[in-house]
Length: 261
Image 1: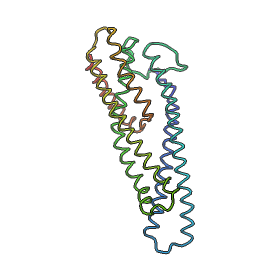
Image 2: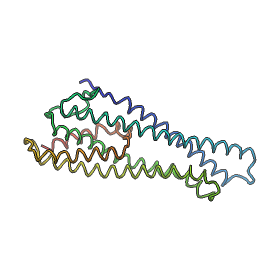
Image 3: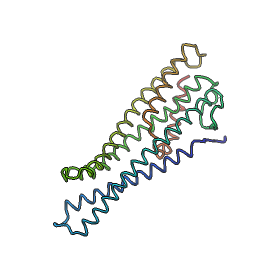
Image 4: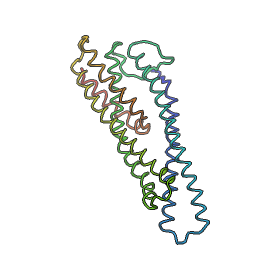
């Protein structure tokens, strides 16, 4: 079956920007670690030539930090925009409408379900299920990144006192941003995990029976909660982790979906 996903190019662009931002972050961390090592272990007094190199590298490091911060902001704006398009397509697919300018083909796997609220719920649950399992793997990777990248910044910050306010502000910003992103990721995962339990309970209770009017709000609650927390987190899933584990997660989803009947 032909698969058309009109918002994929934007996700690819976001992925490239995130990769560029991470490279800038690593460059800054390496430079800061190098400068710290020179001050800590180089023969004293340090030559004027080394001092000049340090000053140039410090400027490169600051520019890299600013570049990383700007790229991070841009990717979040792009991600928020493309997620709005994706939600509109979700509505079209779930209710058989064509309100979006472009619609996906072969993206959702619940075509056997009649158009309506139950299809919306299953589409959302499938998305949420993949999100939960991908986030679980992302948490470990991001924790390692947080620790490794933050080390040179903290070494530099705590080894020189507070004589350089500008330097301190630049260098402390990165560990704080990485820590805040990790906390957001953790909250995101915990909420999605809880929402998926709600999806499972409500869909299991309904099974194959016809929907009553009172069933509609029961199904809408986890749908709204999922897209609310997704919008709040505004966090793109790691494409490498997602692609590597997509088949295994899809197999788990098929088993979960079969158990709902």
